[in-house]
Amino acid sequence: MERSTGSNMQIQGQRTQSTAIVKVQEEPSIKIEPTVGGQLLRKLFQIIFFVQLFLVSILVIVLTIRGLIYAGSTDRFHPKKWYPPLLVSTASAGIVSFIWQSITFHCPSKAIKAVFWFTPLLTCAVGVLHVLIGSPLSLAAGTIAILSGVIQSLYACWVNSRFDYASKILTVSTSAPPYNTTTFVIVSIITCLVYSSFAVTGIGGATATGTSLDIAFIVVILLSFLWSMQVIKNMLYVTISRIRYMNFACGVDINTGAAFHYTVKHLVGSVCIGSAIVPVIGTIRGSARAINLVAGDNDEFLFSCADCYSGFASTLITYGNRWGFVHVGIYNKGFIQASADTWEMFKRVELISLIDSDLTGVFCFLSGVAVGSICGIVGGTWELIIHKGYATEVSIYAFLIGYFMCRIALAWQQASVSAYYVSYAENPQSLRFDATIPVRIEQLHRFQV
Image: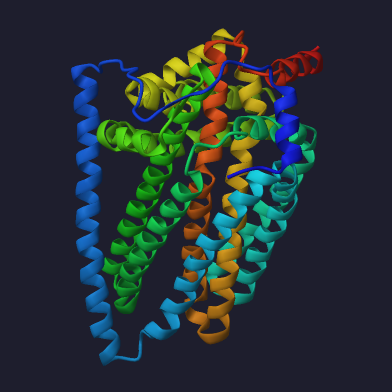
């Protein structure tokens, strides 16, 4: 991948010239031996992940075969009307996600502005689609989507002043992407396409009969899908953050294949733990921020409750945050220990306020929502035309697939940003860093005064 020539010249002009990058084929050995308890926990989560993946795969195969047999003997389920819209939406998710990560790399400033202003419109469009479907479930989903779109638009207005910094940090951290990044992203997207299509066939098989037990099967498949997609995303995250950290901190350019091999061989257990913890803690922390904004400081009771909940969320984030994945990749730490160490390091160098105000994580989230909304509109509209009864569920499934597909496509860029922050926090005086972070910290201090 290469940015435009003008962008490259700008980045080179911003940076202080450092020593030449050393290319290595194998990983430098930076390893901290985990405790016995930590090793057991990693191994336990790794075993649980692969066992559930194996069992759910068997379940999907059985449900698919049973659904096709059942569809041949009854008119209740129509595979030709259920599968094509969802499979086309899945393919659309892969195509749009790859194009979007490319746009983000080449034009980060425009991409950030586009996401913050167009995602609310796409979310509201999904809401309108569900309202048009008219079922009780779709009306509830449509109402939530429209309210979410309004909140997103208000948030975009509130953080408008942070767009420039988000563009700068994204530009400087991804200015020299790892070798074969495009191939890495394409293979990841294809893997997700195959896995998503496989999961969809099982959900369709359970939908064919639609008993209470089948609804439970669908929930199990969806939970497995969510965890598996998080694991895929974070495998990329750990791999790329390891490569970029070594580049930022040491000037070493690591082979992408060697880094991925190391992740698969040593770090799957920690990645599985982090993939289960981070989404939960992130949701709690996000809700705490929202409650703080709503509560304000006028009502003493509400303020005290919000403050208590916020303190609880702040404690949790110490032991489960996405920056911990960088130390997982570099030092082979357990995820909880890695999260705690990186967060304490951010506190020590006074980067917490900068981390909290950074929009790159929100940008990746809203990008996922935008792509998910596009896929939901494609699948839902198609079903609304040919079979209204399937429109709600197909639209929701398509949204989830599109969301995760985009998050996986953007994982290498988010990992690069995290590696930049962590390597900077470990050595703020390094000549390998330009003035992007110091200037932003100075601006935040002026605003606080």
